[in-house]
Length: 235
Image 1 (cartoon, rainbow, N blue to C red):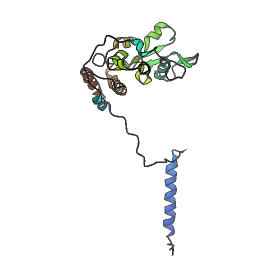
Image 2 (cartoon, rainbow, N blue to C red):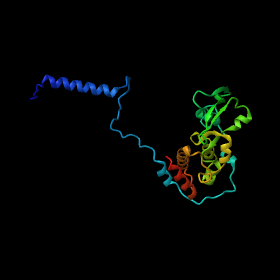
Image 3 (spheres, helix red, strand yellow):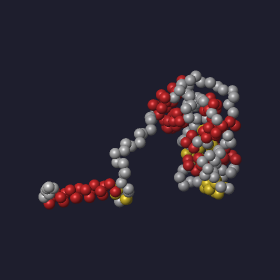
Image 4 (cartoon, rainbow, N blue to C red):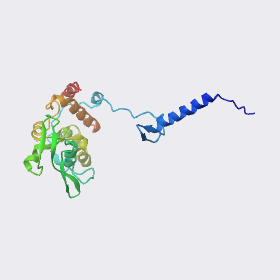
């Protein structure tokens, strides 16, 4: 026989109120309704590995100076590898510009052909402002830099890649930065042991360099590792 237990009214009310409050907290965040988490016990995604740990995982080899580096092996510069109708140069110029400063136009299938704008060069901290990027001298004054240069990538393992793999690397937006033209020229193909940006940017630069080499399984040499460790010291 089932027994019915009469609970005090106060306990029933408190239980209902508590359940309601729990429901409200689950579905409403700052006045915005959201779906309840279907798997509240699922573990969150692990945070990305720290750059120093990634650096320790890179393969260290003696530095080599290959005499067979071929820029053409990386494909045409600034191909539209993401298929948005714009070449990678315009994508990077728009992404890295001071918000709201750019003037863009439609060019063929591209809806953001960048004509003018303002940029803060990460390598020097200088403000770069241009009013006509169709002018060759202005276009050369702001360049798109491969953080890990193509020649450096070639010497670190890209010489064994397929043409498609090299083309993907050369146009990887996460590896590209809009920078001051003369500064980019001074950097050339130098690695961190040969060239460094301003002190305030060295931490970010080292992090980006390490993550690029890790993602693409590129090697590092001992002097490069020492320089990267020094720059991570500014983080």
